[in-house]
Length: 200
Image 1: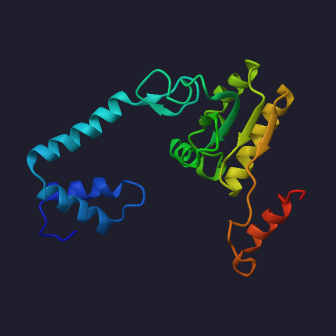
Image 2 (image 1 turned 120 degrees about the horizontal axis):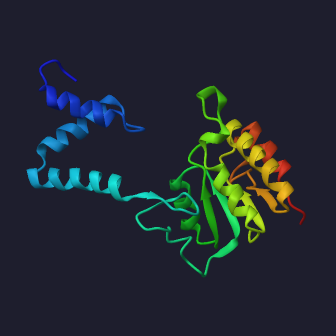
């Protein structure tokens, strides 16, 4: 921000810039927008932040974010509790729920194994996943981590832990998008499409 900006405005901008995907220009725009809001609106905004931070916690079963003891999915008796879809972050659950096709339950890892970033297996919610499987009700665990080096490594690590427990461990199929053109597909996408081909 410019040197002539008031210090509280600079500090506010720096706080917004700490959010993921927010650069300094966007942060400055947000800070200036806050200054144009009524004091009552700013109070409501600040209260919403504090309230979310104080009341939202991890579901004791799946590690998703909730303000109740159990998240709505774990608390739903109509869901298939024998199938667990393992995701990296809580926001990934929303993507699956939008499809309306998955009727099982979830488990949130809150990250991926990444030794270069200092993230080790013990830093993730893997132990609670293993404990869920050890209870004996689970029949299938779907690894739905992103198709990255870290995502693949995390999926492989968890599969090694769960397979001896007698549970079926599967991985999401990755490949060509519906309506995609072969000539525009990159090598990794084509490889995954070949690797995950199905019998017709």
